[in-house]
Length: 257
Length: 304
Image 1: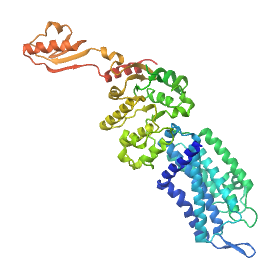
Image 2 (image 1 turned 60 degrees about the vertical axis):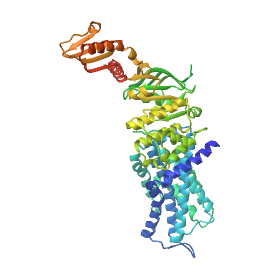
Image 3 (image 1 turned 90 degrees about the vertical axis):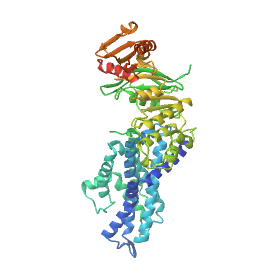
Image 4 (image 1 turned 90 degrees about the horizontal axis):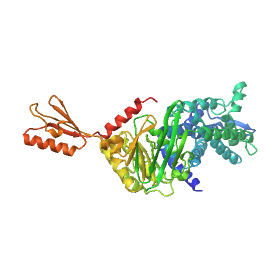
């Protein structure tokens, strides 16, 4: 119980450092909204007829796509890069030498990232509804919320795990972008894929990004049903467990070079 | 007799084919300032980081307060304060936040005001770490080590890169901690630091202890003879009592003596009576630095 309190207390310090770092603030908070604006400008925001007599704005599809991107940025990208910097600066080693339990620290990192992700998703949705007339979920809201939280936790675990192959802080943006950008393009996030072919389809089905995007878009807007994409969430969960195991096994507290 | 806080027996550690620590043994008593002196690469940091629990040993026995540091036992971490060789603090937090963050990890922390006063950072309380000078960051590092009110402190070259004033201030802090009854394990390659702070010192070179003692008695330093040097006119002759031990080189004279008080008395009273002045008169004993250079040179030259 005391360790849980320590973790929550740690979230406060992590957040202080986060909001005072202009780079992390910009890339995490402003970047996704920028994409939402750019996509709406480029691809337009016309009406789409989704059922006889029922039309929604195209932004209704952009919002969950960008929400997925936001969650990945706030969790995977943010955690991997900021942990790499803390590791290189020696701050992680210092904490590792203190009595703070390892899991309290990691839980704090993940809770912070998940909170930022939720905040971003809300901002995206409100922004899309106010300026682009996006239709917000109602009956599928519980499924949407669950998908956000599961996705955020999974991409946080993967962000922790990937630090094991990041040699130093300078290399962290390169490693993170090289691993995530191609997936974002082939996974229905930036561009909706109409009948993706061959290996792109296979890669999308293997990696977690498309499962997350499909589950999020599907639960944001669905004519009937709960909107829950159980199979996608199960694949996501498997990636999360894998990330957790690799993270626990290979995480390093000291600079690698 | 104070109990031993740190016990190390036949400690060994290799990195690949490099044997960094080759079987060293020592103990550190409670409330003692214990210094490990040695050149870069001698194995000081490896030893201290094994004691801190950051590195695994290959062989030997290590105990701190009866715990094996390799287990990372929390009860041990709660009693340890650590200053690493390089600083490591989050650049975006303030001094007060940093200290409070670490205070929160310990069951009975020292108050923030006390900690900041001890290291002289009270007026920097609300500054962000990015705004601190190198010396101030180092002091913040010491503040973090003190936050939990630890019983034993491990300081790995705590004053490297300090200007003389900051160094003196840091020494006062360490002496203050010693007076509070803390046990202090210090590594250093600075002779005057060890001379000023340490109760006991071991000298380590190429992973082995090559000398140990108090700073004053290290390697028989207290028995080493004093050398008296001066110049005198060639026309005069030294008194009989000291003539035997003198070496002459032109006008220069060098005397080796184990009783410098008597030798100097005889020399100067003779000079005053004769009415000559001894130019450049000096009496020197080997400094800790001389002793240190001598023993580390021997050790590094020795076949491994």
